[in-house]
Length: 299
Image (cartoon, rainbow, N blue to C red; front, side, top):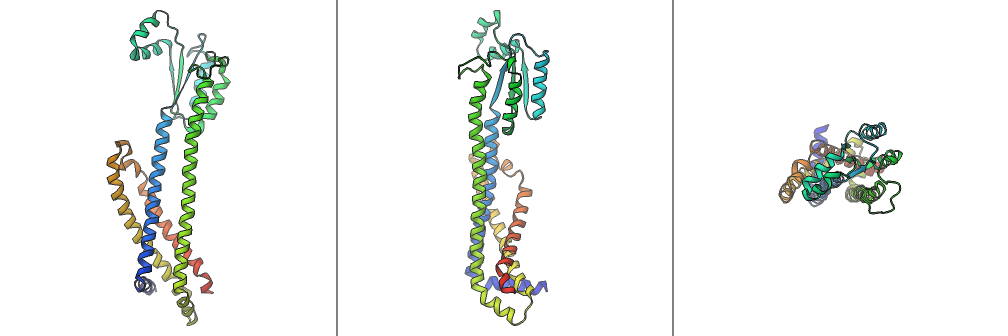
């Protein structure tokens, strides 16, 4: 039975070469743009992570507090509990001074006799989704920090509130970029569905009389539905490998324009999962679409 269905599917493909070739070309382009969208998704999140990793919060402790103070210890522990990805680094006055010495020795020579620099808690590598939680935890211990609740200067870098306000603007932009990316994906998926639906109806229009006559002469539903479904599985299979070859060729050559961190290896981290799932999903969508499109002719 399968051999007969396969023969009928190949017959359908060959007897209308123009419709078959145009369908394969359209399907190839759709799969290719899906692959490009996967790359843009990975690249966008790499860019977001890269920007986010450069953002840090510095908490300047009052002179009465250091790493041995219970409230400071609790604060650091609570921040670390938010996520293992967050880096919390405590630096004493001397360590801050030593870091400054690497940047400006002349300034340090003036300051080292009477070190005015505060003990500092440096927070880095904060996931985007945890900034609000981090803000809540820090505000519970706001009294630990130098003039953090009194300073009115919005540009005062020693003021936690001013730091967080500036960071919040950056975070809003990054989150908007994430939202826009997912919105593009949704719009693209809807566009694919519309295109596929249009192609299927072109085929239905072309074969509708034949489907009707085939049913009248007593052929089973299997010989009406499955040849068309298998036909589109073949289309999907051919289109997938054509688009995959085109995708790898273009991406491999474009990757030379980027730094090593944007290499092909990074962009295709999950290729062994993404591409097989993409192929199976596409064949399934086409098969199901054909079923519902031809359903009224099978009755």
